[in-house]
Length: 411
Image (cartoon, rainbow, N blue to C red; front, side, top):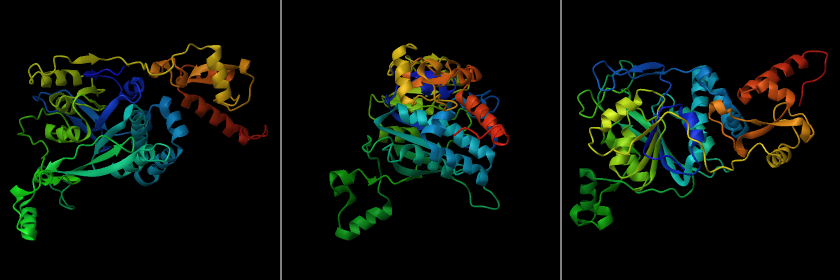
């Protein structure tokens, strides 16, 4: 069962891995952008003490989950590696970090669910290719819906370029028929004159549907960013206005639906979801997030009296929980073609051992989808470490053998 109205302060990769599949109606995420900056809330603000870095290396990528990315999405993996040729190793590591989490986000979405990835032009074009690969392949059956430009005012102006005054929201659906409720904006004065000029019809006498306004376009310029004097501003780095989240939630979820924000920060998406009658799950690795969120939610007296805070990792209940049994081993043996999942050498079933693909220390559980068969040697080399550790060791051995007189490399 998916936790509801719950804030997890833990690595969102581990929490996502523990959520049941197809249980979330809408995901909004405002992750780091690889801006190569350090962010911190100013002293004296309600979020004072909160800080995070937006600079990336391959040490930020969890190797326990790389096997899923490389094995199930090889085209995406190749693109991520190629990105370092044009944008450097930091961008490549950042995209791998994001892809690992987006794979899990896609899994937990319902078939009618949608995801909005909020980013700025620093990495939006790279993230769009990653999202295309994860959501839009023929195998996945999802769809790209919109690239929304959120335009705003305020802030500084560069001397040698046009002022950068917009963010990007990449809107994708998991399936071909997502829940969507059209949004409308008032007709502009020019549109009203155009309609009146064509037939002399007053804007007040338009048919009911048209009278609600114009169908909202994919550029939003009517919601400004939070300025230093904005009443709702907490001082939290990269905080977004509640009105922006209310628009996203209103368009792609219904009352009672479950909204997930895996980078929830000061909880803007959670505030909007609660006010609009949605259930929610928030995740943030910053330990102070709970203090900031509770302080913020207390301003809405009684609105968040059912808030649950957890620091653990949830365990899935939608998968077949099996002990390391003979039946599980027989199924894995057939599935892997009698090969060790590490060195790819053929063995008899009695010479293969059941192992966890994702270690328990990284959120992996005791269920069939997290089991694999390894030969005794590979299992001892791997230990309780991730599969990437074992595979890197095997590649090193292959490299040595290929340059020696002992014979050709495996495979």
